[in-house]
Length: 248
Image 1 (cartoon, rainbow, N blue to C red):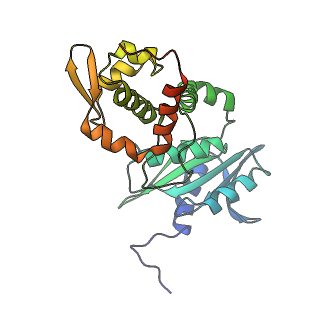
Image 2: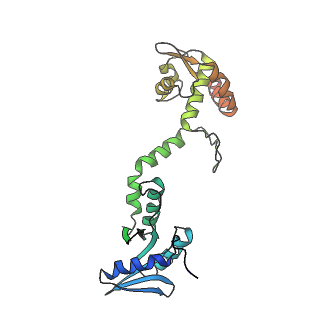
Image 3: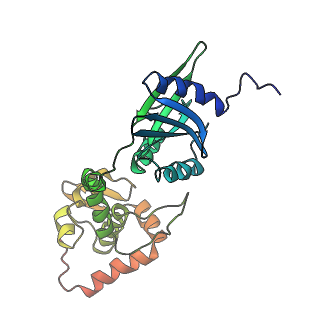
């Protein structure tokens, strides 16, 4: 049965990779103890798993090969989507995280080009976390800025309650209760350092500027904060329980 010339098969990857390693003085063997390709040079042992697409099964298979060698690669045809895309960057991160190597084979009219995109190497988790320190701090800040957990994990296409939105609801509640206030007076009531920015940006259209340094809640704000009765009750309760609340 003849192969479809327009369709790629896993075996199509073997010859370009064989030539690539042979040109670098490796002895190359196919299908050795279930390994798709094995390249040997002196004491160095390279194992390559060939697949047309990246999958969980491929990653599992490749990580199992790490029991046999520290030089394990996965080889796939060059993707049709951009190698500068977020998708590709995420794939590369995962492969580095698993300490695997990645080879892509570009099929052209006259020949094939083999390119090693990632060499197997140890993954430094601490260094990775240090690079993400700002994101970690932002996550902690978001948690501290929330009064309670109003979201359900795994939800899609639903409104998410963020610390920023909760802060907006707090400001709107205080303006509805006390009437027009300055950012300074709101901060004294406990609305935080982002109060002026929230009022100026007015992202949800909940606030109305009256005069210099004075804001009130808009009709849209009065209506829409009612969609969050638990938070409204919480902040109205804080007002009632605080004897130090000031109106300025």
